[in-house]
Length: 166
Image (cartoon, rainbow, N blue to C red; front, top):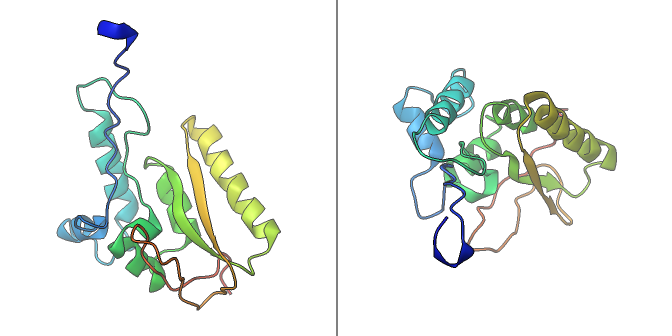
């Protein structure tokens, strides 16, 4: 508690990429996990988050590793090449910080599939008693195999992959 009735609640120690920084997968590659999504990815995700959670400071927020597909050029590349898919990112969210973040979705994806993804995120959050979010980016007029057209300085364009494997 400080002056003016403002209380310090803690620090969110999350590692979140930005387009002006090195890509998260570049760190995984330094640790011998290449490409991102290959065996060992889950273990590294867990180690990073465990390290953040062990910091001897007052933590708040997610305080974990964030994997926003369309906000990191390396994650976008791994997704576009099919090295990772929605199931992988759901798996990683069990040991990471945030859930599905800036995850692109083709316009022709059935509502039942999107509902299933949301149910999976909710199930993980409930099972592990941790907050998880789900930022799906629906891409109007686009189908699997098409390139997104966000036209945003904050998002990386990707080649859309189907949420359900063929």
